Amino acid sequence: MHDELRTANLLGAASLALSDLLLAGATAAAGTSASGAAALVVLAADPGLSVTELGRRVGLSQPAAARMVESLEKQRLVRRERTWGRWVAVRPTDLGAQAAHSLLASRGSALRTAVGRLDEHEQEQLDTLLAKLLTGLYTAPGDAERLCRLCDRDACQARGAVCPVGQADRDCRAHGDRSDG
Image (cartoon, rainbow, N blue to C red; front, side, top):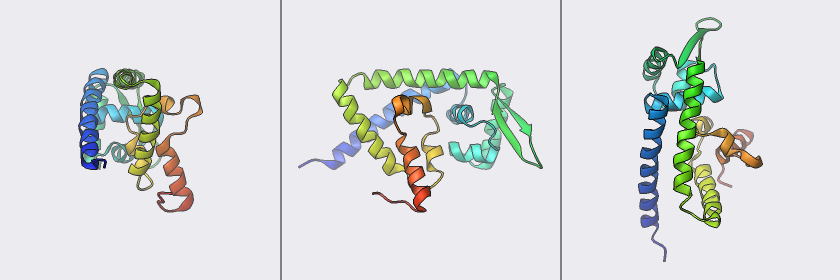
């Protein structure tokens, strides 16, 4: 009989270890906080978000997001642009886009090193299992942006692969509810 609690505990330990490794590399590469690093990746993929939407996508309240954007502006990583009415768009500067690229490269290198401990067959199995876990972690429209806030979208969709979180989001929106299929 399989010990589900042990597997869950191992997953938690591995997740935390990888998170620590990735955040240390990402924050060093971007020269900013973890939420600032996530914001740069989000803005590189989707420039022009409002401060509130950017905060939602990186898991911050509107006041915390405003402080983060202010900090990123001081570092010359983002700029705010007035659009229409009182709406302000946040866009990465060239320096911010370079920082996002650097932190994704750092993140990718650390992850490839970790995954490299597995043989090719184990990597394929892990890919399948992680896709299933991520699909299960998606619960409502809007989760995709939060779950994938530090994702390298190009790597996720390489060779025609489908992002499992993006697919869960499309399925949910198409059906108007969450189904675990």
